[in-house]
Length: 214
Image 1: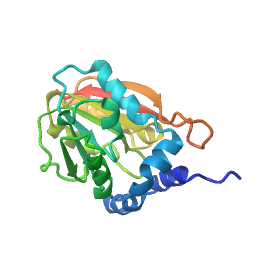
Image 2: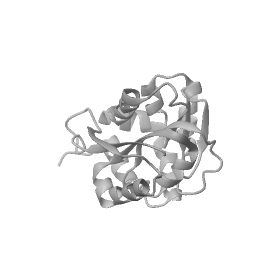
Image 3: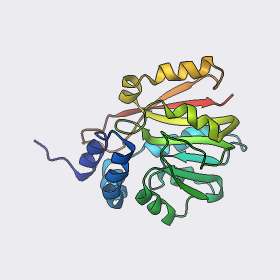
Image 4: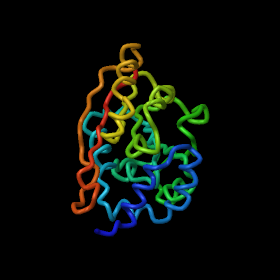
């Protein structure tokens, strides 16, 4: 049997989390090696796919950006925008500390996205996320609350692990929001999450949801 790499173990253990407190505790230990053991070792291409999806459709007014579950800042790095254009939100203070050191954000917020979001400014022109809507992390519930931090017409580029999307019935949640005229039509694209071959998750896919707040 091939021994699992540290990155693979880190990913798979993160998928076993079940509560916000679990996530805070887990990333306290995972944060110091997240960039090297996970992102570099696994060839994490997902953040670039989210950034590319944003740039493909964004207008000049689709700022500032809220980077949801920003971690150590991979989406912001791939966006290649001035820090004044991006705020980051994450549940882990240790991950936020690492993001802060990269100078990629205007502001950073420690927040549990399953709870109230009043501490986050509203009026964002776009809301982006890579890697947060997945096993052990967020289901579709927070999608409604995130509408409150965006202005009318705000652009959403939300990545969801493909298997998680199906298990957690994201389609039903999106359909309900659309029927209630909370959001416009949803476009879905499929992308590879990892660029590096040869590990157990090389073929994992994510779905990129694109829609606008009504």
